Image (cartoon, rainbow, N blue to C red; front, side, top):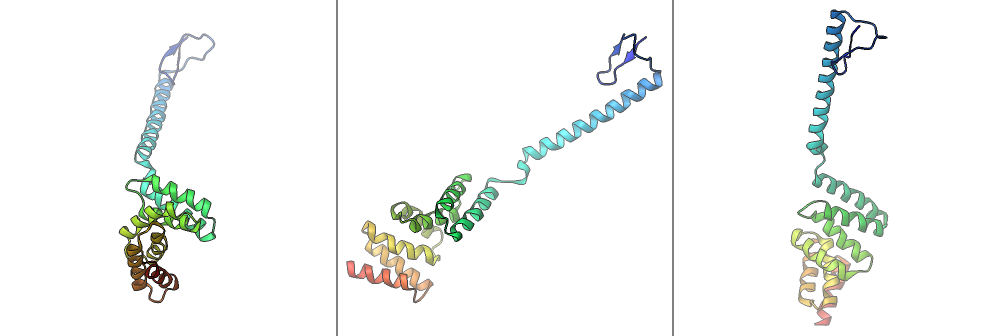
Length: 178
């Protein structure tokens, strides 16, 4: 007696197996093909979703990382915020300008003006109307001997935020040093 294996389509010579009628064999083949088609369709759909990135671009991941880092920054956890902003900077190219700016501000809060200097200069170029960046630059630039640039940053900050005490102090300080 012969037995049809619906998984692989072969016939077995196993004597202990019950013999199937031709109708049962055809039904088993049909159900096996239907299951195979469903499986292949599902696998193809999953492969396409995986190839498309699942809807998550590098820029989107970077944006979420900046949002997480903002939470740490606002909570005063500057060490964790530094790591998160740094990760956001390296997630996508071109670098996330918000992450670069915020990383510079974290370095200022941590008392690392040398590390903040380049990032804040880039941020000032990207966002000339950001008063916070201009104020921090006005306080950092005298440390590297750039008094005229520090005064210009302080004046720019004062145009954006008239009467800001830190900007006024920075402008007075740079005027005294020259």
